[in-house]
Amino acid sequence: MSKKYFTLVEAEALLPMIKEELYHLQQLQNEFQEKYVELRTMYDSEGAFELESQMEFLEIQANMHVNNLHAQGVQLKDIDHGLVDFPALIDGQEVLLCWKQGEDQIEYYHGIHEGFQGRKKIE
Image (cartoon, rainbow, N blue to C red; front, side):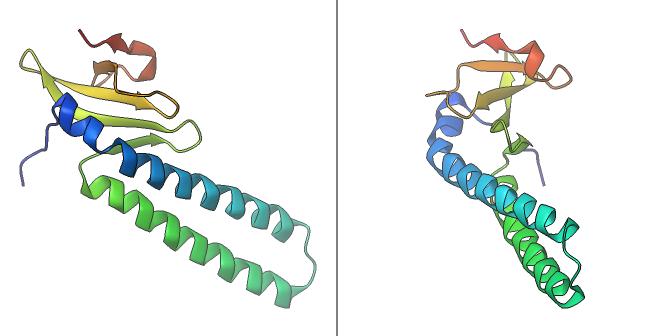
């Protein structure tokens, strides 16, 4: 299977879906963390089993949302900050179009080894 490269238009067309997936992932992550804290303070083994089962189900749901993103060719970098990258080619060079939750559109890119700190404005 060949690697998918996005145009800016293709990547931005996915933003509504990505925003929705991120929202669900962040909600699931918050719920998981709450249950984890509750589990750490629990002394009842029967209640602990129930909480662990709920946490496993939350993990399955989260994996489904992550897989939805990966199936589109999107790279999820950080759930908390809503960082998402899209493989692309600029001037024949492989780069990552970079979007952060809260931004209206994709305006930045970075090299594949640079990360968020290496973001450059798309011209």
